[in-house]
Image (cartoon, rainbow, N blue to C red):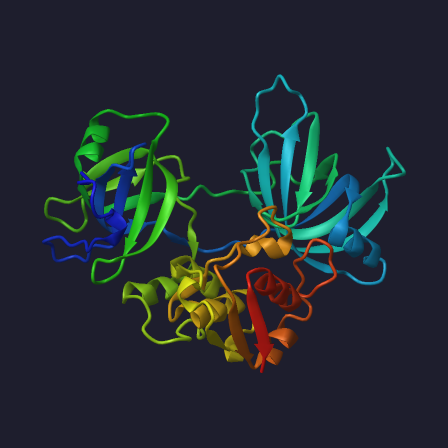
Amino acid sequence: MSDGGERYEDRIWTWDRAEPLRFLLVGEEWDGEQTVWARCADLQGLFAEEEPRRERLTLTGCVPRGRLRKAVDGAVRERDRLGDLSLQVDDEDETSGRPPHDWELVDVVVLDSRPSADDRARLDVVIEAEVGGWPGSRAEPVSARVRIYNGWGGGWLGECRRVEGLYGPRRPFARPEFTLVGCEPGEPLLRRLTTRREAGDPVSLFVLDRAGRVVRVEEHLFLHVGETRPSVLGGALVDVRLEGGGFVKPQPYAGRPAWDAWYEGAPSSPNEWARLDTRGRAEWLKFARPAGGEDRVGDTCHLDGRFATDVPGVQCALGEAIGGPGAAFAQCWGAVRGCPCGGNRLPGPITLVWHDAHIAREALASVSADEVGELTYFESVLWLLEQSGITVEPA
């Protein structure tokens, strides 16, 4: 158990076995007491092929606002790419006791709109998007209210009465299967192997590098223990199949190069993320340590803009400009989407010289995220930096 001193995240983890130690399962009590549930050599099922699920949906009885309204108005001229939206489907029946359903719509394209048959003051908006969220087997509320947001954590873009095509059995959702491979159980997991808990146990997944340093933590996971058998790796280790299919979100294979790079340790030189594609760069940011610029107040930082060709590329380059290799800008990026937090302000001013700024400006000219729909993503980033107390000098 934790001795109340050094946090597990700050320790170096090793074990006396031939196989590399890659993962820890850690539980934490309400008072901060940490406990190792298991040490593991591998987590089978962590990576999975991404199956595109682009589908045509209709926002029925829609009252759009902001950039959704602009995209709807422009759909008669061209198919506007709207970026990402999120939906919250509430059951208006207060006696149902059902929690809201959350859905993610990725790379939304507005195809058409027409006055709604039930209410001519509202619109039926036809869109195409990649759909993610709750499994399609969950029942659609009979009396629903759908709130539309500007991506996760973004501002409100309107509402509609229902979304045709969102629910139903025609969308297959394969439940991922996870197995702890080469597992050395701690006392809590040994107890759980003999006494099951239907609700699952809250744990965090610690990802280690080759030297045993914690390079990433996945929190708020629930452990449902299934079949246990002697490990394929031999020795006194076991393999534990996890039930429920929701232990952790499977990672795309395209992001695996980022995992492999960080397994070798935190980067010592800038732009090691530059060779990755967009999904790989997004995965890289989940490993990067937050840097808020507290130690750079009054300094002039230099951003290498040669590889800032997409949204995660801009975020990687900015983080390293402020915090060095392997850093991420400790700012709520949802602020560019209208997050109510409004972003964080740094302790004092910083000057940022953005070299080759034209690369990001041109590459992101067609990308927008602000809820009003007036700024490109590059312009939104400049606004966010200004709000954070950073003066940008394009170069």
